[in-house]
Length: 137
Image (tube, rainbow, N blue to C red; front, side, top):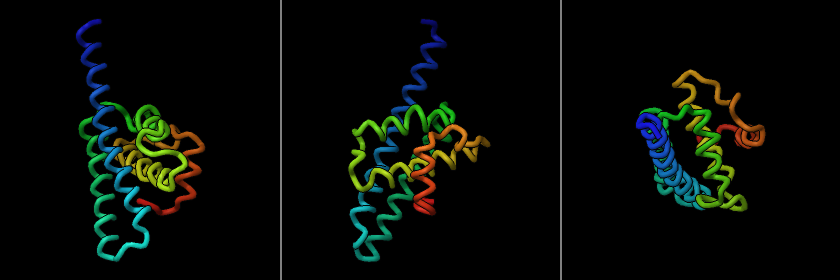
């Protein structure tokens, strides 16, 4: 393997691992949000702040540190990580909210890079996001 090919492959792998770490934090924040629906107002504010912070970290990972375009990142890193069941099971009540929160971050990154994320998104995901309305915007 040539050095440039090796560097490109290593760089993509590190980008993907960085993105998954940010995604893990986002899923944890969404889990707390869904579980804390009946929490006191000050706790709800803290939970919302945690979600915003996790989304910002993931956004920074996507726009500053990753060399993977947002559409490919969504389809090759984010969705497979979410659908793998390692971060959240599909049967858990925070699965769809986690997908929505992650999609919103990828959408913002795509907008910043002037690409259309919808064109690269599976219909099932678009349906989940559309049904969620303004959630995590």
